[in-house]
Length: 425
Image 1 (cartoon, rainbow, N blue to C red):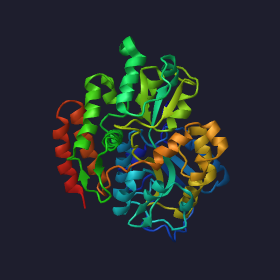
Image 2 (cartoon, helix red, strand yellow):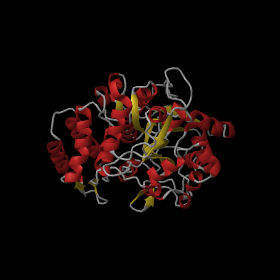
Image 3 (cartoon, rainbow, N blue to C red):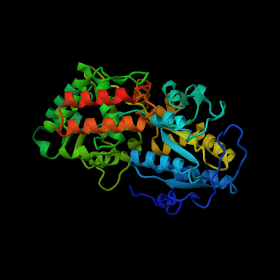
Image 4 (tube, one colour):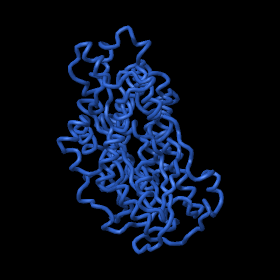
């Protein structure tokens, strides 16, 4: 997918200047009584391609309060760092931030984002796990934009050809199916792929491996529990998969898009990814061999379906932004039911509204919705610590060391247990 240029000229360079894109800094700290109106910016990555459409709809109706699209890199860690840099420099370059759900507490605790009015969003209409990600210490700091739950994409055509009637529910079943389907074709197609490059996606996949083996990375209080047999079995599943070729060697470089393209080229039988991929992979295009040939299922676990990491994004308001009244209205527009329907229909982004998962018309049109609803409803949060940046970096280093053979699973988990314990409240 071609990357669009940043809409605000030289944004990265501009973050070294106090003035941002020609807008003065502001000391307004709360959005509850914000009255300023005027131009704002929307800061996000956009692998779905839906953001320009939504912004155009807003801009056509609000010519005096136009939104500038500032597109960030695909790498979640880079996105976070750029947003933090903007906050620390106290510029108003960034107005509305599209935050990974695990960043809300960190950004709120550091006062990089504003507390929002309690009636800013219809929280009574969204899936339960989603609402928790928009809060910090019982107060609302974000509006749910899109949810995310992991799904297992698989070559339905190849399974049917081999006489396999159902996708796997466990890791062992997946390996058996791969042996049956691939046979002597293992040199051309690998069994499984996920996100294993050293970035946020590795934290997600590591957490899913631990949780799906019956373990727990941290509890609700942020206390780590990685010194358990369950955690070691989960880590060993990934390590063994790299050693025996279940996951290809170049899988260590996979982020979401690299893996998606490998799946579409026919290089993977199974691929773990988010729902946004469904709409992309189902369209006929050059280098896409899987349109109309794949299905989705829950990710596999040790004894049954695994536990997804809770993904998704929330919209938050930069504490140093201007024109906050406009920003609040724009956030409501981007997160309302109509926009949520459009994001589902055009980009297969997981809705935050419960009712959309159960509408018969949508279930017929998007057959993955029942799987996705179960994935989100049973999803586990990633490490629950305010110092999330430090926690995810520690997780990534430990997991990467184990996957690349620099440390054993036991040693990597032992070091990670100590590091996360130091970050716990």
